[in-house]
Length: 199
Image 1 (cartoon, one colour):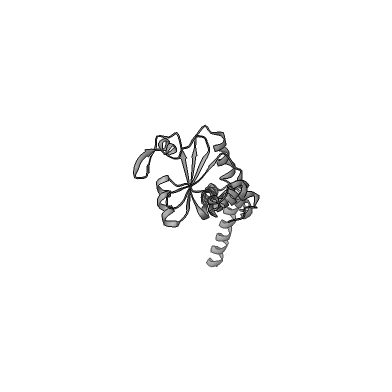
Image 2 (cartoon, rainbow, N blue to C red):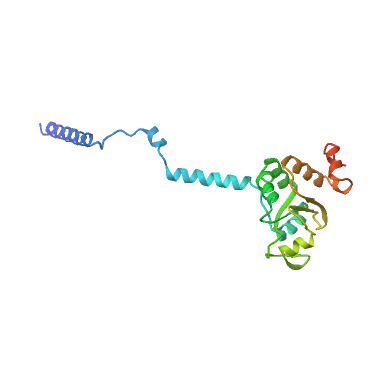
């Protein structure tokens, strides 16, 4: 009899507690879908960081002039030095349209070591065993207008100068022109006229 009373008491107590929470709104059932749809700051931050990391991996990596000279010898790649000025409109267009193009990025990653030089900067680098400013480096390369893009072979020899802006399609063709070594035997216009054929 005592056992039955205990069971009745336990059941009654449980029912009373459930009724209390139900009346106060604390016993509302949790909908899993509703929880998943609600903003989750930790999840959102994680997704944001992953997106940022993916964008950084996809973006073009720029090297310093000194890094590039060492890397070119190690990897046998052509150095591409983009001399720019902060006020230069067409330099900004290159950054915005050409250097963000997926095919251009892939081509540069595959065969070139890209360098950006603020041609009016007093920042120091090393050129032919001498410390020079970026402005002096631009003078060494006889930069007279912007953008001025010098292509330099792995041994440090000046290969070809591209003056001015090219859109992604034309720029990719110019990279092929340099990589193929066609600049040694013909002008870019001839290379284009031949359909971008290598010599």
